[in-house]
Length: 168
Image (cartoon, rainbow, N blue to C red; front, side, top):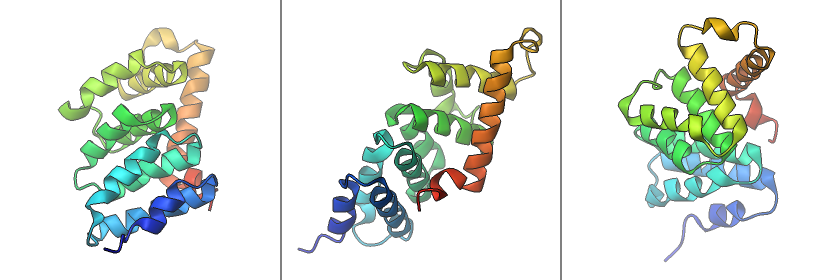
């Protein structure tokens, strides 16, 4: 039988990031339309959550969100199976969507404080402080201030789609 996903599957294995990004976007379109055989799409996309190229990994999270019926589950997958960039993006997206207190994700928010990646731990703490009433002792912490600005930039990039558009 014809494998309708042979071309996107081959493109995902390419050494060229732009081709992997295009393939993820194509899979997102096909998967969100419920195309026959599209049940394999989430698995193909999930494998790219750990791609060494940050734009590919970020696009994989976007694609997974597009094909998932349950956005919370897609975010959970990103937090559990993604690389450091994807884990941070999943945290930010969950917060932007108001899911940071969702019982399905709250344990993963807490786990982010113990993440293997220092940057993810720092950003998780900063995000937690932003989402709650800012802690008084942080107001003079220059490092916290820089991280807050970095998170603000990343949120703006996520909302505008700028981060993944630059590779097109």
